[in-house]
Image (cartoon, rainbow, N blue to C red; front, side, top):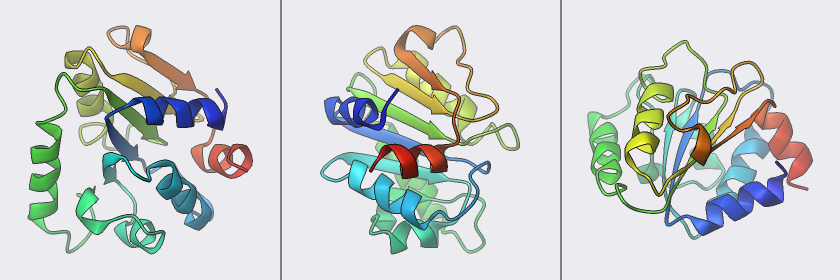
Amino acid sequence: MTFDELREEVQRASLVLVGIGEELSGSLENFYQVLGKLLEKKDYFIVTLLDRAGLEAAGIASDQVTAPFSEGEPQESWEKYLHWLSFTLNQKLCVLELGVGFKNPQVIRFPFEKTCYFNQKSRYVRMNRTFPQLSAEIAERGISIKRDPVDFFEKEAW
């Protein structure tokens, strides 16, 4: 998959759910900026296992982000995410899972797969350099990319 193909997947969707995992490394500033541009004019929500501040510095709206493991993260951000998620069923949803491993699969990896499983109009893009495999239940609506997301966004987007 190329970045242009990824952009097309996002543009075809009505809603975009993004999971940012703990396996991302290196300088994330450019990665966050490219992600922000990719999500422009879309209805989206981001669940991050990394930092909220980096996303906000890239221009991503703070009320569209939850960082459940960040110190001082308000419970309201998780509740807002769950509320947003409740409106995704039967919508054209693009799920982007970027660098999510198995350190905390109960936060992004498994719930995102379940969301895709129940929403038959969804598309799933899993990008992970170590564990890109998709479960059999969502494989026909998914794309597996064995790449580092930071590297992919930096090299492919330009």
